[in-house]
Amino acid sequence: MEHLNLDYRVRASTLMETLVATVLIVVVFMMASMILNNLFSNSIKSNTRDVEAYLSELNYLYLNDKLSLPYYDDYKQWEISIVADKNNTQNIILFEAKNSKTNQNILKEIIAN
Image (cartoon, rainbow, N blue to C red; front, side, top):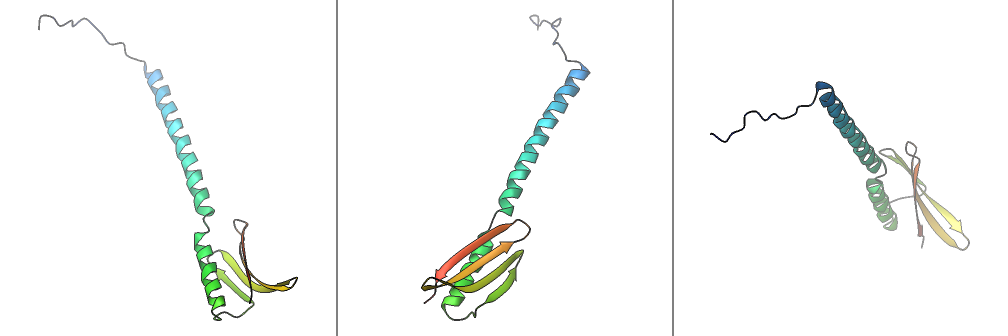
């Protein structure tokens, strides 16, 4: 206990420096959370897996003669249309899904027998 130097003092920062540092940390975390929120919301909006699975199901129904053309349907926020089209000498079946809110369009074509 004889060797302790009790006269040594740690230099403290002022209240203003502490507040400025706290505000800077809060601003950095807010910006990071806003960026992550944007990334996640964009990935959710551009996800088309469920409507593509539904189009595959409709394709299966058409190939097994369970679906009559022209076919129109609403699936969640998507407008589905299946129509027959003649391209040169081939008959083509157009599977189209449109999302009016995100302006996305999915188009699949198959050659009819």
